[in-house]
Length: 125
Image 1 (tube, rainbow, N blue to C red):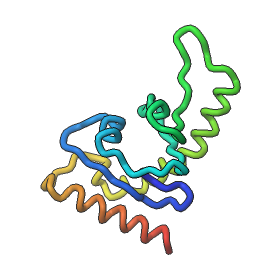
Image 2: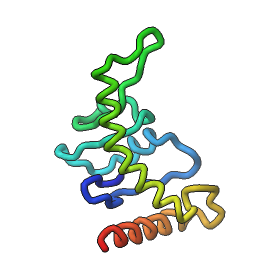
Image 3: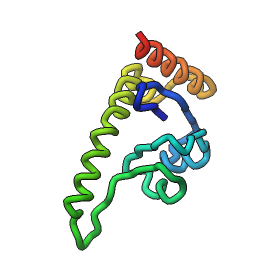
Image 4: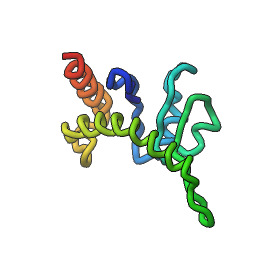
């Protein structure tokens, strides 16, 4: 999870294999305060039903297109989420997330958290 106001990486969760993002989120249950807004992408459909202050983009149905108001909401959400995507892009520069991980699996979480700490220190400069 990334804190948008400061662009800091706050929470990381890991799993073996390739679980879906939302399944990993539900399993890890990161400590989110009610005052914190969670801006999720379309892979997290249904998160807004579980908890308050969660926002996902609207989807069109097979028969109807989105109304202009919902399109505007999706565009505003995308403008906020792009900041999170930029943080993810910065973390992928280290290639630990960009491709297959070929080292010991035990140390993946440690290495990723070290990269997140480097990123957080870089943001504080």
